[in-house]
Length: 132
Image (cartoon, rainbow, N blue to C red; front, side, top):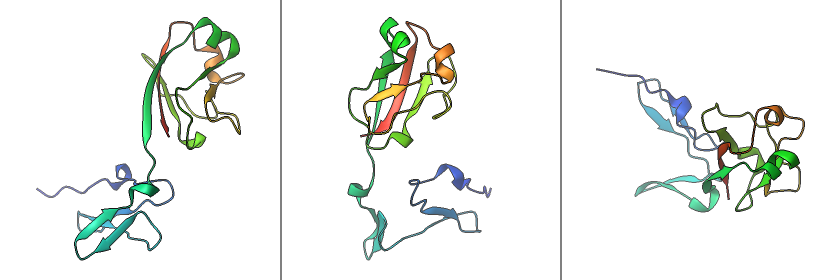
């Protein structure tokens, strides 16, 4: 049975997608000279220094968090545009619509005036994933 691979879920990074359908139900790897994937006589390798390590944390919303419309993360984010937040029992939230991170602040998740302002309550548990 031949099944076509859905490469949309094989994205390597935002800046260097790297994988694509080769038209024969397989995958072709795009190697860039300055990219994180290299090819030599031993095969493909990844330069780990060019990859982000992601941290996944859980946080229980406090009354203070609700009042201040923010909470502080355990470690600073390497890139505030790559944060993902999900309220347990809810749906994944949208960055810039439901929550955000202010410019120059890599440790705080904010929702003042955004979607979470009317949706989050003390005791809610959230999961946050972000690059460190």
